[in-house]
Amino acid sequence: MVAVRGEMSWFCCGNAWGPCGSTGHGACGTCNSGSRQHAWPAASQACLDITRPDLCGIGLTRRSCGFRHRTTNLCNGAAVTTSIADCGPRTRSFCGERSCCGANCASNRLIDLTPSAYSVIASLSTGLRPVSVDVG
Image (tube, rainbow, N blue to C red; front, side, top):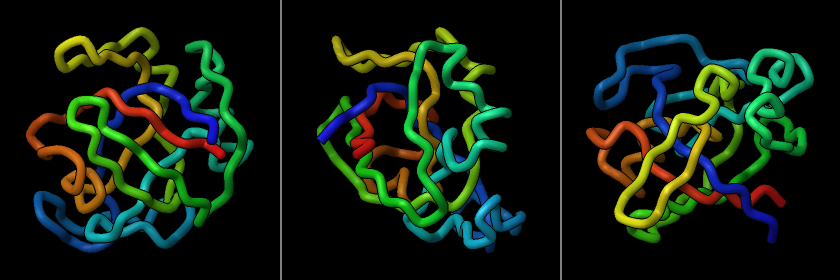
């Protein structure tokens, strides 16, 4: 399995859940804050054109709606498997951004998890965490 290191954050989509009110259902039309889903910068060519992870030195394989990634929190080793439900994060806006916990650090936002998925591996109050994402 090939893994990429980066940062994870969380975002709201779909029906109200936890800290989220009702919002749109994302680029795939299926996104819900209460489901174990994520946004991926390479969900389509149009998504890549917006997110531009390549500008941060990250090469990602395009994956379509529904593709499953396993994300591991480098702070505590907890992992969650989620499916692509949206485009994002806009990686190029966060080039060089860095988050650490102890000696475990990662740079550049790579994946946005729904609050339901994020809360499986980290507290929502942390906002950002270094992670490893299995990309296939």
